[in-house]
Image 1 (cartoon, rainbow, N blue to C red):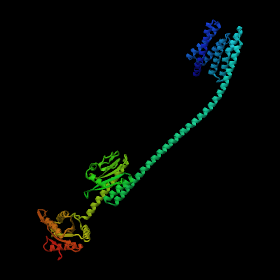
Image 2: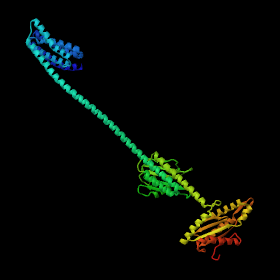
Image 3: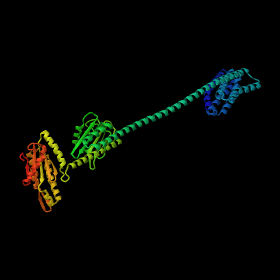
Image 4: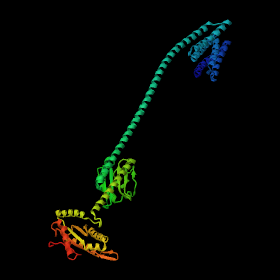
Length: 553
């Protein structure tokens, strides 16, 4: 009944005005001495109606429709009595109030159903009927205000019916529009939901696309990394040159992985030296500065690490060895053997956060393959060196001597260089073996080979075992006199060498022949033959001596 209270409050304002006017009228009549009992009677009933409205509204009694109905019926009956009073002002005021009460009842009750409609008709007509009957019985009935009220009531009901009909049509139109609006709203909500679903699907597709692109990048990167590793494996199995290996590694990393600069340094134990390689997309040659940084010790601390060093947030000037180039990310991979770090693989990128776990695994795989290649190269070098050496004395063997001799005499012949050669034999070596045994004989060969190699290395010469107890020394760029002086030192050192056998000290001596191109020998191919001839002359003349080749031999 919130609607009843709402309208009731508005009608109370109107009743307040009407009541106030009647009170004013009463006061004026009182002043003019025209106030009679009818005026007092009418005023009392109007004030009573006004007070009932005020009290019932304040107490929320009108929330109950039955209380409202009965209250308005009583008010209408009281008002109808005033309507039929003789005092015209009171009668007219009561008419207005009666009309207001009718409008209030019709407005609040409305014509929601036939039953309510009949109740409304009864409520607005019954009070006039009751009052008219009473006035007729008592002998006074004024038909003019009665008919006037009936006309007004009929007009009010008619107007309300018309208004209600129009309102119903409007309500129907509003309901139709509301239904259409609700339908459109539902459709719009469906479209919104569909749009959200489409957007969700679109977002999922975009996400899947990005994931596929990322997966494709990872696959391409992985494929490139596998290709590089396969290429390196293939290279390792076919080539054993360290410099070529470093060239391939730096080129491959730079081209396939996308780094900006790749540096590689490896220590060669055989040469006791470092190999360097630097490749960069910056269009500059950083090799010299890298070597300078290495020699100045700026990379020393990284040779003590055994795990990858990573920095994805490189500040400018943080690393001296980057030569002031822009670096955002850097990784340093140690190349390890069983004991220590003998090489570094360094990769740089201008952007930050470019080194991840996959990158580390790839670089470590490359480092492992480099390690394998280096080990293979060292093993090959050792095997190649072993193939050049005599198994007992460890000096060069006859096959390698012949190869070296061929290269040297061709160089001497073409470039007009000096080349000397000495051949010596251990005196009475068979007797040494027969007397002291072959083990002692092998010891003699080793000692003489060591002495000869010592002097050969000092003088830039080459020594090898030619066969049995015979040894050859080749002296590149040495004259006959220079070769003689070296052999004289070797000879004296051998003579002075005392070799212990049980409780005895055994002396060993050698017989030597020396020849030189072009000083004596006109054809370098004949050097070995002429030196051998000079050695046999030493043996024929009492052994333990050096014979120098000359044109008369």
